[in-house]
Length: 194
Ligand SMILES: Cc1cc2nc3c(=O)[nH]c(=O)nc-3n(C[C@H](O)[C@H](O)[C@H](O)COP(=O)(O)O)c2cc1C
Image 1 (cartoon, rainbow, N blue to C red):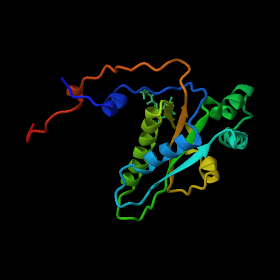
Image 2: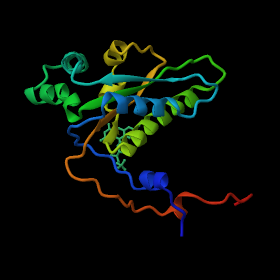
Image 3: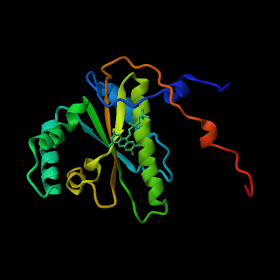
């Protein structure tokens, strides 16, 4: 029988939610969520993570950017459906955070460790939001890798958008989720020569 704690229960039974409505985190809650992100494990204290906030204040401008980036990716005029889908990306949640890895490529701390630290920050953000009773989902998709979007976010070639974290409230009440996972398949004690 495994030992549990409120935090382990929260983590083990978490579930991503792709449809999110209001309310989203308040400014004070957002500060807590960002502090959780910034307290991710960080080899060398490089602070290789940045958090860029998207809410109703910049949604329209960002939708315009998404449309320009889509047009640049396509070699034909986008359909109405494509345009609508692309422009409405930020409508999927009241608050979206771009979690960015600010990479120092020549640093003695390897790039992968800097990326992983930003990834850990993204997960900290999701879990902190969950602990404040919000739901969320980590997405990437083309808008994480598009050079025009990266540039508009002030990133250079070495940097990466490790995720778009959508946060808000689930339309239906959250119930603890049980995954069909066999931990014995995923973990073992190493034995020499095995
Ligand atoms: C780096 C990363 C990128 C992801 N990108 C997407 C994405 O673009 N779209 C998506 O639907 N899910 C994406 N996911 C998966 C979801 O965040 C989520 O984990 C998945 O839907 C499974 O749900 P669960 O977290 O409840 O197990 C991504 C996950 C990670 C770690």
